[in-house]
Image (cartoon, rainbow, N blue to C red; front, side):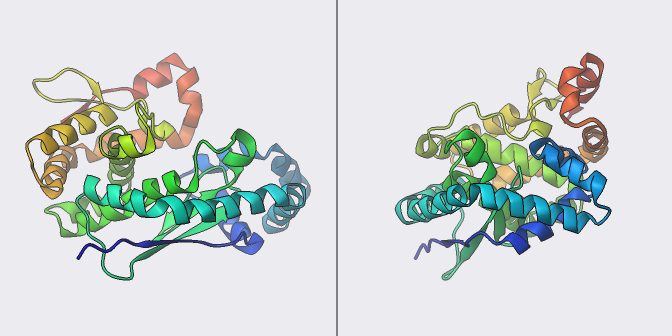
Length: 288
């Protein structure tokens, strides 16, 4: 019997948000997250200059933001709970088909609201940014965010059972770039594309200008390359785990190249897109 998981959305908790804010202000792997937070909340930079205790400064930011936007936050959460009732079952069913994945009975994922400008995740839980909807409207709802993040969890589960998958799990750079590229490729392919009405999604900024080249092929964006392999694999009725094993085998030797991409991104972030030389360097082909 095919079981579908539950999606549980918690209420907004300022203390949980404080904890995750402070963690990502000082995250050594994703150094650009600090810049993203300060860009989203320029007032925090002023608070940090006045207040030596970082936690106190962040708490004031969160308290002030909640006072100003508490109605919007609560509305987004209530609307998202309705979306869970209406759409989560269908979304999980399509994700299960796309990744040929079966959940165990009683499986559940937890969504935690945050005002961070991105959505961190952990073991079967992820943070759902309400900031995007407050500033931009409901074009990225909870269900889409949930399926994006949960596809990563499924990817990790496959890696644990796939030849050489453990080597990917142990390589944070390769794991990150592959998880984001794979998820974006899935959203740009059937059946997820049809369910969410998505096409030509760009994915996270870090992967948008990554190009690969096979020995006999032309340069192609990594997202499009994985998408092409995925569509071909489905057309040939290959199992998803076989498709994934092929992808892993191709990208394992490229660990150093992805390490260099991470170094560049941590140093320059989105400013890479505004500098021709930096962009050219970032776009250097990853040969597979």
